[in-house]
Length: 146
Image (tube, rainbow, N blue to C red; front, top):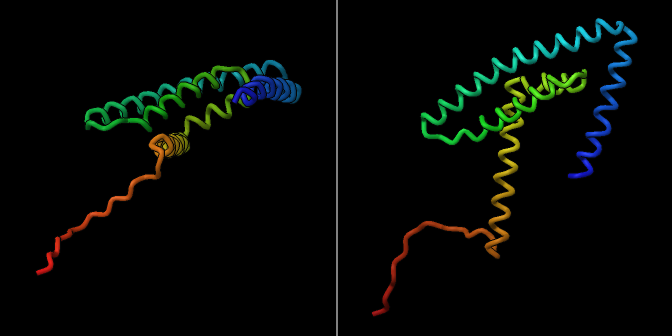
């Protein structure tokens, strides 16, 4: 996990610098800066809209007495998307805008929840020292010989 963070902290800024230089050399410095500011503004506007929708979903789930686990994960993804959209660069903007797509965000949140539930189930089975019990419901009667 630590190696993943090192790779991300080294390669993402390098890719961002490369993209900024490549796009800046094609369209010019001022249009590149304007494009970065435009994507940040558009991202914040869309983020606010999606955040309010997600907050309403959380309230509805709580009102029904349900645990809004998937919706809370979606809210976390929106928080990450906001940080990525405010970071200057085209790669982070692309990832941030992808996180703003509700169906994609929902898919990722549900997938993450399934992995957590499976991992928790496996951990419980290991700590109990035996495999999961199998319960078979049925009826029985005692037969006495005469």
